[in-house]
Image (cartoon, rainbow, N blue to C red; front, side, top):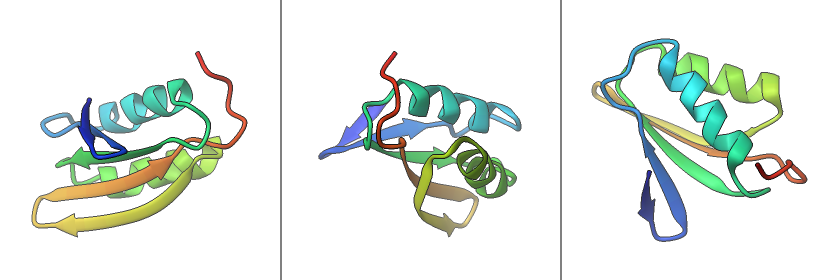
Length: 84
């Protein structure tokens, strides 16, 4: 995972469904409460799967940008989430 200032970057390019959503969930569960992560993915289903997973698990989707084959999704761990 990289860093973009205070925003951590999770590069999931090259992975296919369901791995981007599963790995994003793993990182969000382990993140500090309220921590934001930018996810980079090039799987066409990531723009649907990751926001759906966030909604189901109680994480916040702060933004989603599709640019060509790449999707950038900024997500936030839920406040009060347990830190693993």
